[in-house]
Length: 200
Picture 1 (tube, one colour):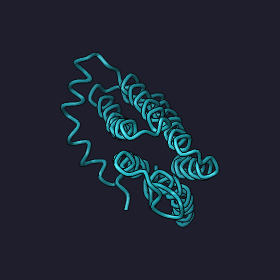
Picture 2 (cartoon, helix red, strand yellow):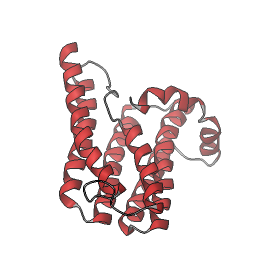
Picture 3 (spheres, one colour):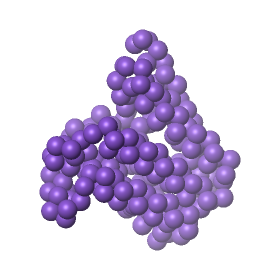
Picture 4 (cartoon, helix red, strand yellow):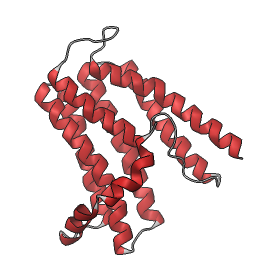
């Protein structure tokens, strides 16, 4: 199950945020940049790997995800939605994904696991856009979409702040999270590929 299917529900809750962004004079691209900044700060917090910083990182990850919805809603309200804005949003999202996983990886010094996690995440996103490129439509489905990853990072950060001991195979909660992204990320990419192949 993926949280991306609830995107329309979340967008109905965005009104006050979109209004606040408009009153502050922010453009959709400006909100995208703020979302990316929140992700970078979260990555730094995760890299510190101290309880208070894990909690801070969790909040910043959730802020990144929420602002990632606000930018699109703001663009639609202002009537300025464009291919350029969509491209910028996707590029910043991918850099945010890399930064967040890098921060988690540095925090527990698990670079091999981090490599597998980031390739799984990037291939999941790549398949989504590549499917759109061949004319089937944007694919958000699969076992683990971006909304799911951000939610898991938020929850994982809170748990890591409270409990840092190993829980499975010598891995603490952050290590388990990276392993999940590695395995399920690649499975999600393959699931998206298989679904699109059947639709061709």
